Length: 129
Image 1 (cartoon, rainbow, N blue to C red):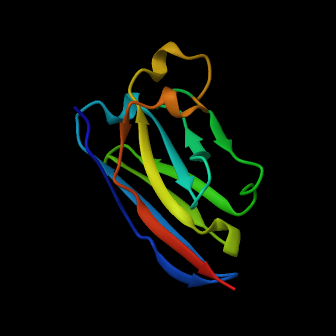
Image 2 (image 1 turned 30 degrees about the vertical axis):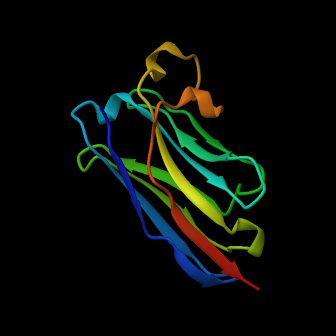
């Protein structure tokens, strides 16, 4: 069982920055691929960024956030962060942290919701214009 707890959401003006953090339980954190998803009202949950497990060097960013968002992990602290810069109103959503505990069976970092088997409760990010 893996528990994920997000923090760092809030209200920010367009052009501003926020840093989301996800704390994970468990001893095998370094072996998990980790992802940040978001879901806006009336829209599907989408993958924003993902990072592979330790030993692999694979990251993914949605086209809409490339150059603005950065995902990073600290295996010593069991955390994965999402640094969000140059925020836009269309970035407004609930952001979810997710863990793929079976990532070692995948050739690359998972990009689908079903690739991730543990989820946090979500944190709201609101970007005002």
